[in-house]
Length: 101
Image 1: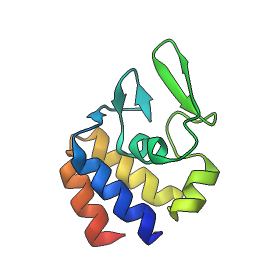
Image 2 (image 1 turned 120 degrees about the vertical axis):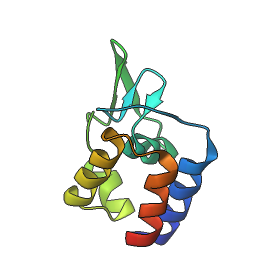
Image 3 (image 1 turned 90 degrees about the vertical axis):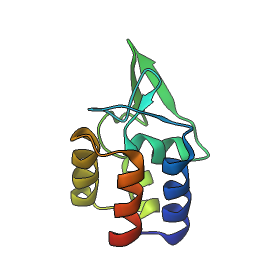
């Protein structure tokens, strides 16, 4: 994983700025851990439709550009989304990212 993206993401997950949600990158004001990574980008390209937010056309996984920039594979994204949706806190996810990515 890109070292700069990793450091910024871990810091963001621990900041308390983002409210944790489940099942999509962003639902209303709640974010999945992957949604937090999207929200860190310079391009705040969120499109809201009925409370569900799309980031560059995606609702569940990182857009290709973000994934490539961060250096995350689809398998890594799936694992992280699973941690998030299974109730792991942003702190627990940040710890895993630090140790394993």
